[in-house]
Length: 328
Image (cartoon, rainbow, N blue to C red):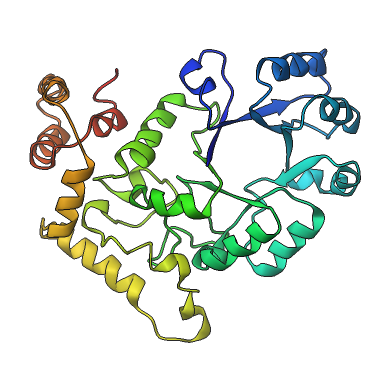
């Protein structure tokens, strides 16, 4: 498993990790861009680089780079598709970016035939992960996922209960299917947001608020604290049977149940045990965050709400960071 992020000079805690991939923009028209990039490869010879050309892909620069390193992969956008044939013939590694996902098996096969090394999947393929993973393993192609985005191409993504949703609670299962993870943290890239999301998904493996707070694509109310554990797990391989005129209301039923429980301020016993077992917070952290809350404006209704929730559920440090209440 790898985590792909942009490279930043002042980001040593990420740059020195062993499980990292760097997303690097490349401007072939800039003076000495190639020389600078070759120097970068000397400094990070064992790290996979996902190169994204700002304008047209330079096959000349790639020929030089390819002689120096086997760890450089080109991220292909729709404007670069005409270059794919030449790149494949020359043995350059490339994959299509998240704006060009495979959303059915026909497109999946097309990308494989074109020579891609990695694939973002979307739509129906996200409901058949066992089959997709087995197929891509057999042809040596990796699967990538942006964790805080919804991998769908439909206009109503994030607006109905059937929306593909991968939550922090699912991360151990997702590692079985996906080879590389990313977070969309805006442009310019917000590394503070990355730190928060990473801890939510990979350290805490839990979120106690609305799904929309950690996934901006999700635009209907759904509180993670009251969702059944198998809400996403079932759908990872359900084949989206409802597409084939089969009656299935499981998505809607679980969604409605979660919101009714939240409205009544009820947490299922199993969920509460999961939360308490997942979140570990020391007395020092508790007191520190508590003092931060006390110093907030008394007129802010959120203070009372978060204070009550924090006291009740022993919220992790990352929760307060996510709202800007605590800056380490």
